[in-house]
Length: 380
Figure (cartoon, rainbow, N blue to C red):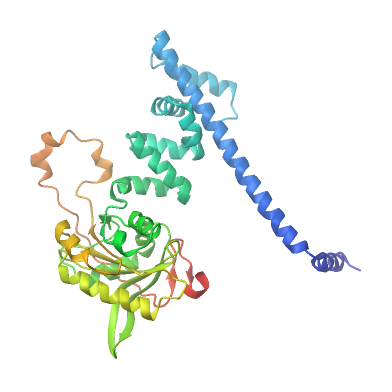
């Protein structure tokens, strides 16, 4: 008997053992969990060490009058003593000092900051000055597993100030806790600065551009959104209707209908969305799905008019606005004088106009942020 034959025989024998496959699956899960816990524990210990070094540098500078140049000497001596470690550069030691200054309480470091990678913390130290806002981004990073690049994107798009700010009627149309979760998932405004659109564009142009940049669009929408289709066809009363964009939210377990408008919100938009949501509930919604949510994305809105328009609607609908591009590039904002000094100059800054790319249509499929395409029925 050859070695391959023996191996195959052994595998068949093992698979015939009652309960073996379940036992193997359980062991794999436990090992993976232990590896993850070990990685988290190592990261936590490392960040606590960095915090303690930063704290001690701060204390020495404050109590013994050490100057800033002592960090240069310390970096050189530590790198000489520990040549195999790459964490004792001058830049990193300055981050350690800033880390300890930003988190004077060690318990807060253990419970929050030490649970994300060091370079995520460096990003937060550079870009977020408010402690409450930093903690919020830490919790979101832990919950959603954001990479450093995604964290940078979310900070620069000011997600903290946009999350949960949409005008909705969810409180009266959805049960708890779904209403609160749905409210927190919607933003206002949405930033579509990844689109290359000029000033004169149509709703169809906006839709095509969003589909063409579906990955960026899904990132902006947030975790859990899965793309179902654009111009999604519904037949109601022997007439044809087309939904601009149809999504399914994997956490809410419901369809999300998006209607795009290139002008200011009008009361009649809520009636049209109410119709779409009702139709999706009747024609597409599975018995196990939760109520469909409608989202109207407009160029601008009067909040009072939007609130009145949604007040007596029985279907869950939200209204948000979108921004195609920030007036001032993020890279320049930290290097400019005060607003008062530049008030006249800022009026001359305009949005950059670029050409519109071609759109792509994916009917009846779900497109995830990572690019996979699967049937909705298999996904959920």
